[in-house]
Length: 170
Image (cartoon, rainbow, N blue to C red):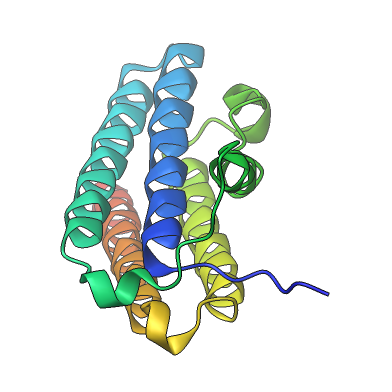
């Protein structure tokens, strides 16, 4: 019985694809809302995610040859297709309508949705980490998890700022 394992490069590729999916999600969601402030928030979240994708791409490029782990012979590129499927079926599914997922149209609801999505991604990466051998860059997956935790902190700051503005406006 063959066990599934990944190397850090593959995990970063998944992370980059998830970030691309989130960029598309927020851009499509912005088109679904007529409120200008909601549209701007969603577009800023898309840019936020675009920066995360670039960050993960840079982190992937810094992985040493030793951390690549064992390279599996894959002439049909099945592993890449499998990884794309994993990325597309977690967190931001590109087949789902963003307007349906963001059923409430307040800024707070959208930020809460973004925070929940980031939490789900941390859980996802913690699970994937178990399939990365130490010799294949397992510690690099921690960098992704830490980055996602930073994303949550940033989103929480935005949410707190909104709540503070609402309180002083009343």
